Length: 325
Image (cartoon, rainbow, N blue to C red; front, side, top):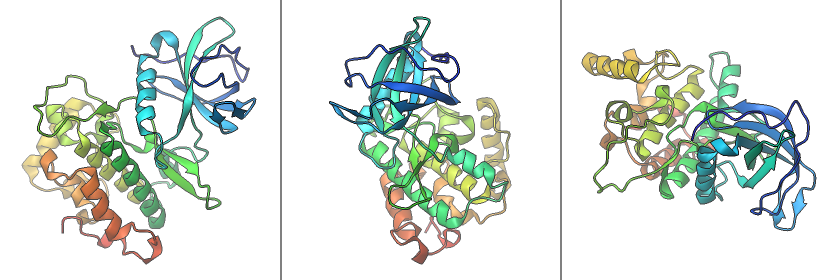
C-alpha cells in the first residue's frame, strides 16, 4: 500500500509511546518536520535516553513515519536498509518502532541517521546556478560511487538516485566538512541476474528526469541505470543546472519523445543545458544502451584512479579526464 503519512502528533509535541520488541523500546521525542515523501514523513527526533540495553543510538536522529495501515513500502525500505547497513556512504538505519499518537493512531517508524547538512539538492540550489567547487564535487562523487558500488554488490538497484536523495552528514574526522551518503531506498529493487530472461515490469520506479534511456523505452531498471543517474547528479554539481534541457516534471512520454529527437539529431551537445566538455562525463551518459554503460564496479575503479583517489588535490581536473579513453 502507498500513501502519505499524516503527522504523528501536533506541532512539536511528544508522542505517547507504544514500543515494538525489535529494538528494546527506544524512547524518543518527535521534533519538527524535515521532509515529506510518497511513503512517509521525516521528522527530527531526540532520544530521551541515548543508550539502551541493545546498543547505542545517537542523541539526534531522523525518524521516517507512516501510518501502520499504509506502511508497507516503508517496511520494505527497512528491509533494504537491513541488507545495506555497514557502508559509511549509505545513511545508517538504527532500527524501527511502532508508536501511538494522542488520538490512538498507530504509526510505523524507521530510525535513521540525521543529515545536518541537508540534501545535495539544497546545496546545489544555494550555488545560484554556478555549481559547487570542483574539490567538493570530487569528494561527493567519490562517496556516492562507493555507496553505489556497495548497493550493487549486495544485489540491489537504487532506482531513484538524484540530488534530493543524497544526504550530507557531518564528518566525524574533519570539522565543517560533510560526507555525501545515499538515502531513501523506498523504490530500490533486487537486481536480476545478467543471464536471466528479464520480465517486463509495468511499474516504473524513480524520477523521470534521472531515468536512463532503457528505462524510458523498455522499463529496464538494472545497475547501469544508477550509473546514468549518477552522471546526471555529477553534472548538476558541476554546473548548478539539471543535466537535461527539459522541465523538471517531464513525463515519461515527453522523455521518450526527447530521446527520439536526440537520436535523430545524432549529436549530444544539443541535449545539454550547459556549456561543458562532453568528454567530461561521456562514460556516464553518452552510451544509450544498457550494455554500453559499465556496471558500478568497473566505473568505480576507472573514475577513482583517474581523479578521485585519496589525495584529491594532487589528481588531475575532472574537466581533463576522458572517460571514454
